[in-house]
Image 1 (cartoon, rainbow, N blue to C red):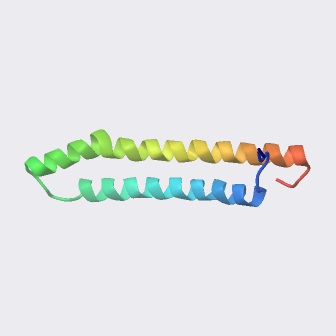
Image 2 (cartoon, rainbow, N blue to C red):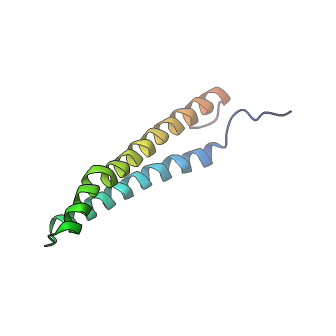
Length: 91
């Protein structure tokens, strides 16, 4: 059985950048939804229910996604740099 050790550094750099870009995109989404929900006159049971879910679970889930993407970006970047150093390739 063959096991690959190492990685395609160019692809890893692309993955690192993509994680960073998607983290920014999710933060932008959170800000847009906060803005529209906060600036919309909407009252009643459904409004209260949505706002409660937005603040309680939806926004929390999106913030957790941002944190996971940022952590993954850091891990990929560190691994890319370590592999580059170990193999004598440019980081």
